[in-house]
Length: 347
Image (tube, rainbow, N blue to C red; front, side):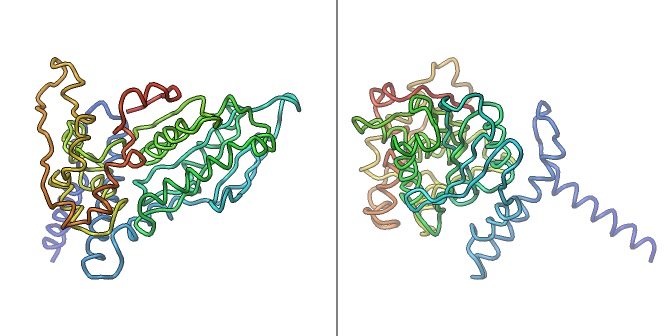
């Protein structure tokens, strides 16, 4: 009996070690912490797949547990005043410094858009709450954190439109004056899907004459295009902890539609049709990157299949959406990019 217990214990320990261990580069700090976190993510992902297969709850509905687990109630403290508002019907969190050096001094402002693949995340999550507070205290800035609606309940362009409505409302002269914000010192920032939304809304504002413009963009590992999902970055990070290629592609497909046909086509990188194929020149990385930097990667243009968009996902829906610059802000000519506010891009 004791021998059987020992064998069972050894087997369980071996299985746990096999499940948790990931070949992570040595230069990454706290590698075991990352491995443990990733094993939780993978377990939740497997549970989400099973739940969807059994018809209990959709995949993203289960994965949303990550958001719920990190949610806090943002409250004011001795340095920061926090209020919950609605700007043009969209929920926002407004963080303002409590102490000012001079009553007449106008303040900087940062509009922040959280990440989460357009399907997860919230401005009320602990990391975003902490980031907003640090920005207020270190910069003396007003921070506007947007609680835009999420897919799959609200597909593209709803998340983008929520952000755009908030930005347009906030950039009104009367609203800026209400919060003592300098119209010439407003930045937009976001991480991952939030970086996508920040870049997209910056482009839209630039098209509007007379509109107050952003001073800068801060795009933190932004997602910028959906045409080619087999770039060197997607290949390098195919099995990356936390965000493997499968999950990133799933975020893209769920942003556009709940039809799994698009997910399968995107996984195979065969989701382009003749309409979107004309834009592939904007994502041909081999044309922009000097050959000495290509390393082991060779450019292979995504397949363009007649009927994939039409029959699988509908020509009037997702197949047009992923070629829309509001969803893929990289898909514009250089002339459109040159006129944008200066961008800080972290990869």
